[in-house]
Length: 178
Image (cartoon, rainbow, N blue to C red):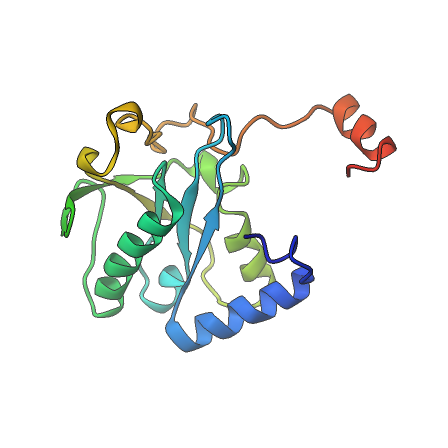
C-alpha cells in the first residue's frame, strides 16, 4: 500500500499528492496498523485547512477503506461550505459520528507526518495544523473492536506505535534494516 515501498521516491509521492490537492482540494493519507493491533490504522485529510479554512479530519481504528469513505463524505460537505467543530454530531449512512478536538501533541509526533511533508513541499499554505477526530458509531465495529478508537484529545494516547531507541536503530542499521 505504501507508494514508496512500491518504488516511488518521496519527491514523486509529494508531487502526485500536490497535484491531487490542486485538482480536488484535498487528499487523504491512510496509515496501516500492525498485525498485532499495537498500532491502529488511521486516515486523515490534507488540504481542508488551506482550501476551506477548516480543521483537517482524522479517523483512527477503523478499516482504512471504511475510514476513507466516511472522511470523503464529510470532506465533500466541508468543501460545499459546511463547518464542523468539536462536539458536533454528523449523520452518516452507518450512524452518527461525533467530532472531537485533536490535542496538539499529535500534530508533531508522526500522526500527521505527510501533512507536514506536503506543507514543506509547498502543496498548500496553511500556517499551522489543526484537526478534528471523527469518532465513528460503534455499530461499525465488531464486538471485539468496539473500543478500538483511541481518543486523540488525550495527549497521553499514542497511535504511531513505540519508537525504537537509539541502540535499536543502530542495530537495525548494522543489519541493513534501516
